[in-house]
Image (cartoon, rainbow, N blue to C red; front, side):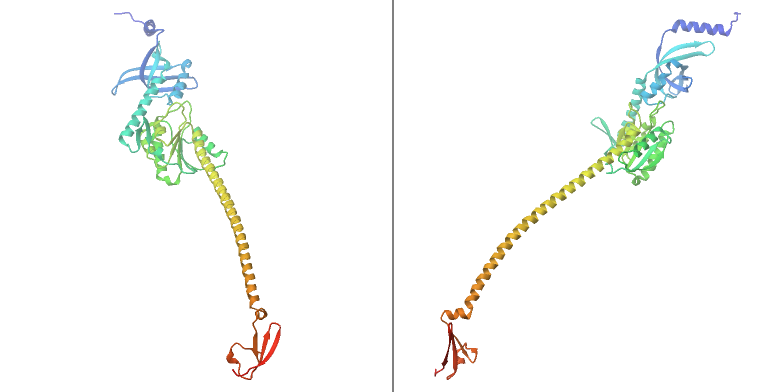
Length: 399
């Protein structure tokens, strides 16, 4: 019979054997995370790492991130835009640690964010390719860029009726509303909110449900804004959902995204009408659009006023020209009529009996009446003959 030994002695031997073979070495591994527990106050993380072959777990190990490497979590989330949680496939740099009481653990000293970003980009590209293949009338590839039907929609001249999809009580919602309300042009907005989770397992479904509700009432809105704030515990996977992206591409109103992450572009960003980096920038873009319309309107008013002034001046010039022509015509007409009157006066003057008599004519009257025919004079009639310088009387002798 072999002599017995204490468990601590055995586990100590295991520790020393592992240290002899692995101490001072780090290893780069790929694994899937499960059972992630993050203790922010104490600044350490406990999790399990597994490797699957099909649906079966081929290997598993406990892992830990201690205080001196806790910053890796925030860096990972900020760079990738996703929360460090379970069911992530990640590339890690680890040290092997063994403790007599706690057993074998992998001490995580680095997380390869580039691998995760590449993996995420592959998944997004897969979704976009699927959209382009299954609904090519909504999403298509043009000169290397994905184009959606929503991007081709014309914006309303004025966008004041806003449908807002955001997480209730979130920083993103607050920043968006504050930017709209505090605009320096005092433009009034009607904002109807459609609250939805923007991260977590149910987020994609909630976003899709609220978007469909808005689409059913599309005539009531000018624009749709889908926003979320930034932060360390970020997760953009909901915005890469296939059904959500397809609905955005087919949306009858321009959809603006302000998802709040500088490094990544989600599928929703690609198929939406306009991608803005943050909720604040998204709201500012709406106000800038309206200001541009106001500027155009003011320019139009100025152009109309200038055109009216030019028309008035032209009309005034025409009226002045007409007045001058009328004055000239009136003067000519008056002169012409004056000449006509003078000629008439001369003619009338010539027609006066006295003038006629001076020309050698005479007037014959009988019983005070002018005789105009020889038939009016009878034999033995006394007649009066008027000359220019006097009168004579005569007796009519036989004809």
